[in-house]
Length: 205
Length: 205
DNA sequence: ATTTTCATGTAAGCAGTTACATGATTGT
DNA sequence: ACAATCATGTAACTGCTTACATGAAAAT
Image (cartoon, rainbow over all chains, first blue to last red; front, top):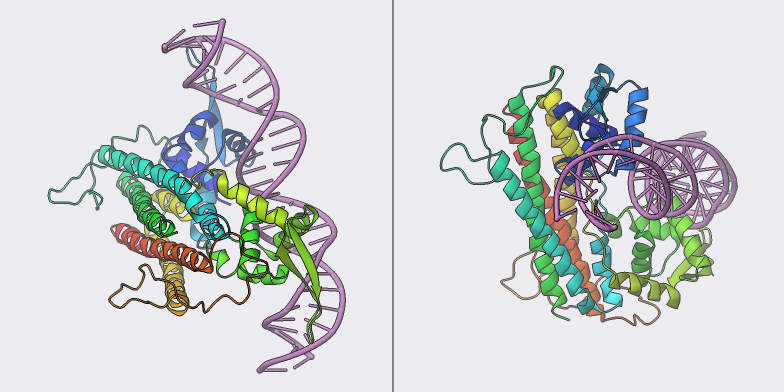
């Protein structure tokens, strides 16, 4: 289980309320880990009881008050120990692959529209990732390919990492965010190419 | 929810007992959908109550009796209607990506071994997939790349598709199994390349 | 007036995992 | 003697989703 840990990482990158976390899980973090606001509030409450995070009431003008959470020492320690224990290479669940094999027992051509929809969704995500990469990780050294290592630069993303990041440098933080984003880009590119292969295969029936 | 449907597809490809299904979910189907035997027995019972599958007691020598399931008309219809309704492009959960971003707040270099473990696991799976492809989908037309479209050939896998496959041809079944396998191969290749990128990034700290 | 955004929750239920249990046969 | 394979299950629990609920401000 890693929702707790995903929340810890997100709060270390920047403290925020349950609501703000829920929105991050529709963006950056959400590209590789999803969670609804209900789930987030519940886990956040448990984490607060366990002393992993601490809340601070923040009054706002024109908006409801919010409870801004940040990571406590116990939470940081919990993250650290999780990082040091091995996890199983993940267990995938590809509904679409089930559908494709199932199509052999129903009309294969009937799946074309569905596969095209998925292809479109992946193309959209790819465009979104590439836009994010161009914005947050502009190519530094000239003669460097778009989705290749970018060296350190003044962060356009971070605003306040609150309590001493204690771990590593903001340089590391940026570079690691970038390599994860490159993973998303590689994934979407692979999916698009594969879905084209699927479409070509379906068209033979 | 697609476990029911994954089971239906597997039973359409070949009828079998709960135990046999559990083993298939460690192999072919399991590459893109996992399930434990407990889960399978429970769902199988529900599906039997709903008339999606029918069981037949099979006595065996030297082994316990087994209950061999095959897909009933209602089950085939349920699969068909599921195939025709759109599903959301899937929601990924990448623990490793959480770890990588989390490593910025702990020791980045400490993650190298873990990432190498995952790289190895993906390399093993790739080798396994390629071996399966070579065995079950031998290249047909000469001057054809290894993981490219293979035309029809006498099936080395199927043994008895039982009750009329009603949907499409065994040709379609083979080709669709192959294109799903090619997806697995593309996925593993992408992961290996990305994990190399991750390792290179981690080594800069 | 209505919808959207901000903000936080409760309640019910389903899917899936982990642990435990049984019992015969086959292989080392 | 011990472990592995075949075969089927129950019980307890955790994680996550869906539906429902409230309430105020800002935007259309």
